[in-house]
Length: 225
Length: 181
Image (cartoon, rainbow over all chains, first blue to last red; front, top):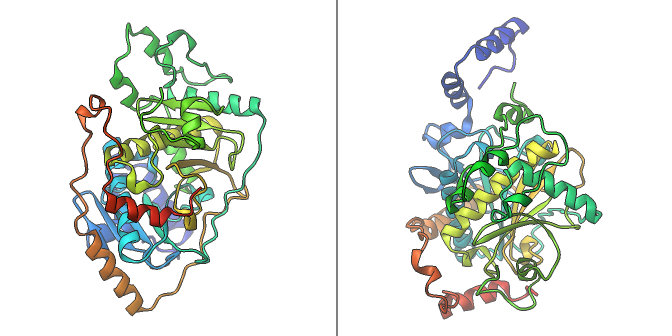
């Protein structure tokens, strides 16, 4: 862990060092700083519930309820958008199985699966975590998802922005009707490329969206310096 | 596209069938993602399987994989297009967990500071013995996790096959879910 009592000079030197790191070095550096990477590699002890070559499920030491499992990737990803598709599949198939285990072994009456991306969403660690939380009636956990009512045209406009950012995934068959972004986009819209293709293959929908998103920008939202 | 396994009276099946209006942002053979006028924040998306599965345990593994892949892509798209400060991926499984509709749904929720949403908890204090008991029970039950169900290529041909849940399973799940509308 980085020393909290560093002098301003030391801190500056460290920041400079981080700035000059190659992406590989940076990843290695983050890994060394990350408590969850140390748990995944067995250097730090935890109550392990499940482990395979890609993920590890441990009991949370600050649980919402007894049996609250933190499901971690062994690979270090600071945020969910960095996970490749096959990793996502694997993590959540395991999460489903853990949820099932909770219903059967510790008298859970329900479960929550929760991922927080960003401090505003409640992310506290710099390592991707899927929470699987056993629930019972009146267990004192009080998740609040208020219902806000929006205007239909507002929903339409926001939906179109998301569609554009997804790369126009919807209405694949009707190429002429691919919804265009409502606002001017700084980056070329990815669906333009798709339109050049003569025909769509089904596999297209599985291709990663070419959103041109800069993960560094997202990482900054998480307090990365 | 309607599903062979759609359920009458299910509002989510109604959305899938187009009987209930919504704003579609993603669709493929098995999955649909929509916005509606009652989200928790502007841009709140609901990612749903087209087939009617009340709870996550009933959703086949390969569909779970795809549903969360789509959710992750939507979450990334929300970051890029809506200028939000975070996103939550949230599933409520069963009434005590806050599930309100008996059709498995993944919520992808855009977040900003002080937006009135609370997905935090007050940590519970457990002693060593309680932790150990839970650990042993959960670990024992979880030791056979793996061997995930792959996509069945022939699934589309065998149309008439109903929900693949044994009676015993069905009874177990209905017991868990008996209070779902």
